[in-house]
Length: 359
Image (cartoon, rainbow, N blue to C red; front, side, top):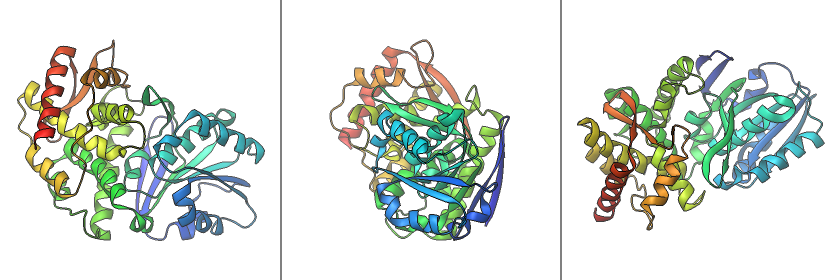
C-alpha cells in the first residue's frame, strides 16, 4: 500500500492507494462514527456498496443513498434530495459521508458534506481512474446548466481510500476518461512521466503495477500544487490544462453526451495548438493525437457554434473580466495562464475544429 499525506492550510489528510482497501475500510476511517451515509451511483451501488457496508463496524448505523449514474446527477435536484436523505437518516455534525464512486459522486457527495449542517466529515472512496484527480484537493461542486462546477466549495475530505481492485470493472470509456487526467498530469509535470504514460495501450488489460504507478505519480503532481495553492488563487489553475475548452464542450453538448476526460482530451489538443501559436512552443501534438486515436478517444464533434463555445469558456472559473484565460505550456512541465482575446480565440478555435474534421 502507498500513502501520501496532503497538507494544506485548512486540513491534513492521507491518500491511501492499494489493493483490498475496501475489505478493511473501517480501520482506515479517521475516527469512529455512529452514523454514516454512503452516497453512490446506480452502477457502483451494485458492485461495491454492499461490500463497503459489510466492512463497516457492526455497531454503526449505515445508510445508502443512490443517484443515477452519469454527470447529469451533479444537479441541484439530486443535491437537494441527498440533503433530505441526510436529515431523514438523522445525520448530525459528528456523522460521516462516504463518497463511493467516480468524480461525479465525489463532487456531489462532497458538496453535500460541505453544506449539511455547515459541514460534516466525508471521505472519498474512488472507483475510477478519473477520480485519482478529482478525489484529491478538496474541490466539491454541482453543475449549473450554464456551466460545469459553478456551484461549489473548497472542502477537503478526511481521507482518500483508493482501492485499485475496483478499477478492473471499468468500461473502456471510463478508462479513457481517467487516463486523460493522467496525461494532463504528465504534460504539466515532466517529460519522462508523460512519455511513460503515452506507451500505455488502453485497449488491452491494464497492468496493475503500471496503473498504480501512474495513479500515485498523478496524485503526487496534484498534491504538490494543492499544498501550495489550495483555493486556486495562483498555480492550482495549472491543473485545468485542457479544461477550458473541455468544460465548454461538455456543457454545450449536454452533460453525459461525452465523458469528462474525453472532452478534456480534445481540450488539451486545442491548448497545445494555442501554445504553439502564442508561445512558439514545441509540443508533441501529433504524438498525443495518435495516442488518443489509437485508444479510441472521440476526436470529432457534432457541429458546434464557435461563438457559443467561447461564451461557455468565458463562464469558466478561471476567466476574469469576461476574458478567456487558458492554461498553456511553454514546454512540458512549464504551464502558464494566458488571457486570449475573443478575435484571436475565434480564429484559433475555428481553425482547430476544421483540423479535427479533416483528420
